[in-house]
Length: 429
Ligand SMILES: *Cc1c(COP(=O)(O)O)cnc(C)c1O
Image (cartoon, rainbow, N blue to C red; front, side):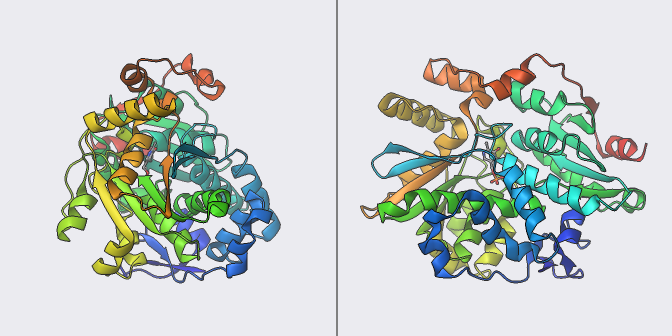
């Protein structure tokens, strides 16, 4: 499988090259040259397949012969070592819980998959790779955990000071070893801009092999398509058309869902649910893409003003606005509406949704499911990761899971930086 740049001004590359490079030299995102639907027998008999087989069958065309079958399956076994249950919330609505991994965020799967691919590609390579990543909250922890102790890889994480939750901050600043946290005086977009700039800075790249572990990296992005297939497996016997509502920030997760759909997964409609960072929502209204600086919200992992992956979504619909509109809607919700939804879900069902999941729930409500449809909203983080806001909104306490307890009493270590120059000095030292 070859990958081309969506800016169409760079050579095509193999899977491993795209993973190691992250972004193409022309600044474009890599995109698979072809997406071949799986035989319908795969979906017809999916109930007989385990998660590793499902993962293998759905991802193998994107990797080709670059990782042998046995190695790929053992990577998947490692990565998919926890559950992805669909929990029923109300009649015709369920939530796909993606938070049962080591950092309790859905990004665990992508981060762990990418780390293990990179480790495999690096086996015979003595040069270190530096993974440079900007986080609005959950990416940092998942990447730090996923790459911890991986040979040949150093990880540098940029996060906006004071704009991630206490638990999120601890998850990315307390591990040590090959993980460094840079605390940026700014917002997420500043972190993302600095990372993008570093990738294009030849005075750095001449000395260091940099790669990204944001969802711009295909090894972080593509394995997320598994979630949608796992949900389908659980819901198939309901014989209803599935509508997915995905709480979206950089739009990588929902974009992977659309790839699953291209592989033949039956999906009626995709809803992108956002907070007030509504660039895509406005685009769907007036077909003008006009990114804005990100604004802070209680669903901070989605505080993204210029979502990187939206261009991939447009590509999946052949850049045709009308076909996109037929299959994809986007709605935005402010913090007070989100809190009301958290309360309503809790009062009616006793289910504790985190702010991101609640935004996803609101997306389904606004879409207005039909009688023959079943709506699934993705619960992308465990409520404990947004402890203060959840406890205060619901007036209850959340039990702290063991994965989280482990980091609570560890000491934060971060390096404060203000601007790009400081990042550069750090990377070159
Ligand atoms: C990253 C994240 C999102 C947004 O996912 P994208 O793929 O960037 O759209 C939503 N919720 C949580 C909890 C996240 O960590």
